[in-house]
Image (cartoon, rainbow, N blue to C red; front, side):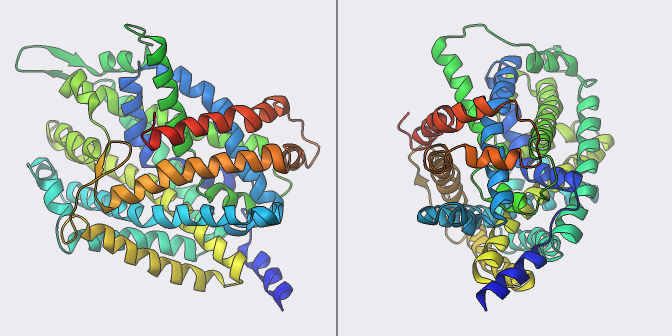
Length: 471
């Protein structure tokens, strides 16, 4: 009876139609809110072009190693994150539980932020962009009693529908539509940002090209060895979170990947797409913020950048600012949806594989359960307001606590344990065999072995210690 159930699941889980579908879906997962608000912030404060160079080096080594490991693990076992580790090494099946818990924690609050994006997108689309720059607009909205829940429901509903439709008709189909549109909008706004010009009250004129120089040209002024290490840590941390590593997502997506697809080539394309969008996001935001806020404006990070600083800039551009604002939030929405869909798919695939549930039953139950948590997150800004000091020094609400637990503790821990499992227990050859399954050449095999056994776990341990406030 159990074997029949597993057989039915493999048929129902289906697969991506080919390499393009997999790459766009996986890239959609990787390209999220972190690319749009955290990458530009890190680049601005970490020496511009210097950060870009360091980030690229780690993307081709550290990021590549962790990403290809998870994708290969998924394709090799043909299982979601909850059961993939069990298939590889039964004694390590408990690691699958961690890989399920992380996306279950992240998805609810990601939907809440997605709801905020929809609110702002609607505001600009109906020509009310001037409201978004009023003092207290953002705080008034998120602390409201019903609006945040309504917009969260709209966002969660869109994600639910895509995952409910399945891999080929849902995730792949929508990724092929949303990702090209997202790329076009990012390219357009980035190009437009270069030609912005503004003269402040002191008569100082700043241009987008000047902002681009700050972003692209490495700044070594006052650089110390300790400062360089800090830049490296920022780049590693940004890369780790940006590529959707240690969230179970790439294992799930890898399990839908056809065996004949070139695994290394596909992973390289995902990294190229993700890095390209992150680079363009910096080219879009840094010159724009620089023109209207000088260098000090570049210090803005997180939600305040997207929901407070940028709307003020759009407002200063007149009628065209409303159009630009609407385009910007459409782009952010697409990035948020493709990422959120992958997170929901990770937990949905887990239940399909673990319990033999149908896709419809899995996504209905998990979608409902996570929406309840989303409501709790929304209430954290009005009914259940509190301020909790976290180990990394920040102070947060319910959303921040969930984000801290998943991103700063569980994800680095899962990454470390995965490196130990592959590097020392099962041995790197387990993954290398899957990468070269069809006789493909893998020229980075030596680098992969060194990274997965020694370098990656050490870097992940540093990320963990930083998150815990020890470093």
